[in-house]
Length: 294
Length: 323
Image 1 (tube, rainbow over the protein chains, first blue to last red):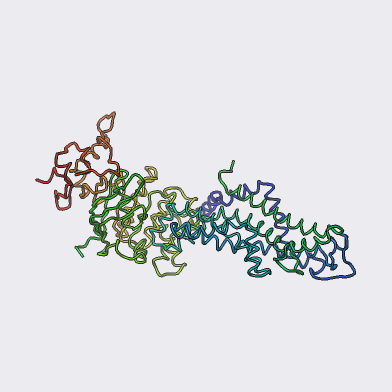
Image 2 (cartoon, helix red, strand yellow):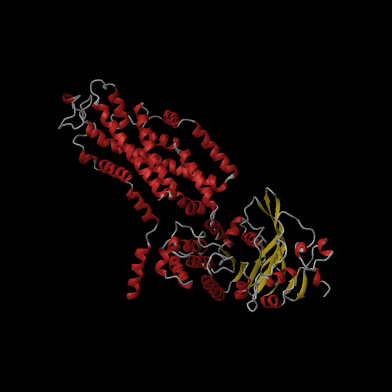
């Protein structure tokens, strides 16, 4: 009994693992923490949108079109009398889900391809990576435009387009990391214990690729949100009346001379979202990279 | 199959292609090991010890490595001929390997219980809960409290990590364990602990073991048979007692001479003149001839065959051919 107590005590002091160290150095980074807080608020907004928004995102009110920001309409109203604040609040749902799902698509596909290329090398590697080079040769935005052009506009197609166009960067990162990890002795030990290739790639190699991947993911979500907004702006993304920030910017563009506030708020929303994700990504990179530790 | 040998290596040749040319890592190696026997595999760095072990496990990276010829019989089956799928069934279950550096041979992102369970689940048909219980039992067996089963490798010291590696290698009660310099990365006191642990467990599980080392002291501690390797082939093979009392090959003699003696005050250690041959060079005749103090004309032209001094003591040297 007494002995057991002692054991747990020593364990507590000992188990300050890698995760705790990373967390500590992340906490010290004030900008990154600010980014994390903004991101957290955004998440809450997205989750509780119906409770926060005073009006529905598609409730039109033709008596109150083109209202300047006021107590009644915090961010004003647009040409159909819809409350811009409510639309921005609901828009966070769309933008965040597009960002995360698009990145999930590209991480799953790109990560698997990269791991296969890095693990088998030779011809398979050549085949996959040259295909990635072809994708990289086309500007990412143009690639996304052409994919949407083929699939047609819409929320789901937008996610696929943004996801596919950013596959190469994840494939490259995972491939490079896989090639380093493949030479480690524990991989050899796993082979020697009779694990098959699938087991080695998914159980041993991919979990060890996580550090660089997490950083890339947090920066990639920001890029994906920007790209989705861009595609919606040119009319290829989510279609009105859905409150997508990019589409709202596009709609407000026609009235920018008289009612510029219509573009301010969705623009600011995009700005803060990508800023917070980039800050978090930078903070994570600094925290995870042992070379930058002081 | 021939008699009751567990593992039998015949005429094994392994080469590596490098930019400097073809490296003959293992040349015509012959070796055998019986049930419950411990074979010490001694040689200098680059003598081909690890390559031989890798060849048995079929882990030689190809390319640049290539098994040129030879047969490796394990329980009557040629390991070099069977399919990958069948080989994976043998890897870990019948033959397992302990690697040199415990610091890097455990996956840093997996709990040690998971790593032991992985081995068990791969080869035994039991569920996760039973596998976990078995993993805990194995940990206790190697002297680690089962409360620590869910810790990560970085929370263990080097000696404890090597114990975990030993637990993993024992997980499926293999018939043969290949230990590639298991104690080189550990300090001397931990070495002694790990060695005695391995010896006890080997007796308990009744497994055979190939112990690769360059430490003759370690060999004296736990081996039954010793094979001395030089430039890719076995130059002398004998039971431990016979080899230590009566080293016969000039290279073996040189090795024993270079051990400092306790009872005399020596300024310099005895050494064998010269250096081991460059792996890319092909020496005609006996590979040891440029360094051998007893070198004869014949040694430069012909390769010496196996000469039996005794039933289980052979040497590859012309000096003993006529006796």
